[in-house]
Image 1 (cartoon, helix red, strand yellow):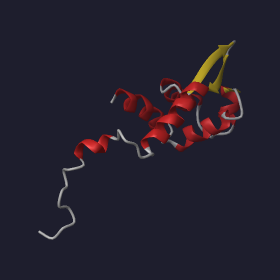
Image 2 (tube, rainbow, N blue to C red; image 1 turned 180 degrees about the vertical axis):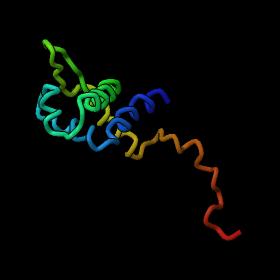
Image 3 (tube, rainbow, N blue to C red; image 1 turned 30 degrees about the horizontal axis):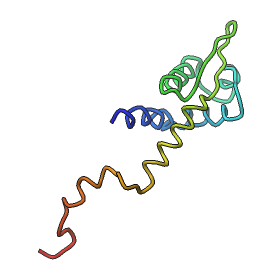
Length: 111
């Protein structure tokens, strides 16, 4: 359950279109917050909120340089998230559904 919770935080953060767009922008490399802000019609505080959520889930890293914050993607978290998504969308021997395979015996049959 812990693994699911950790990874689903990334998907929750990406459920907002602006945050998904920010991640898309960062896929090209590190960007200053001011450069991200230029692309959206939002306030600085709204951008800060979006960046906070992206950083809290681990998808984005921020570093301060002077009065600016520069953001980049965390390649390791992206790799882990891709692997998690692949794992939960691929049939496997030890799937969690195997424990309940007999629960619907007779489903689909006329009773």
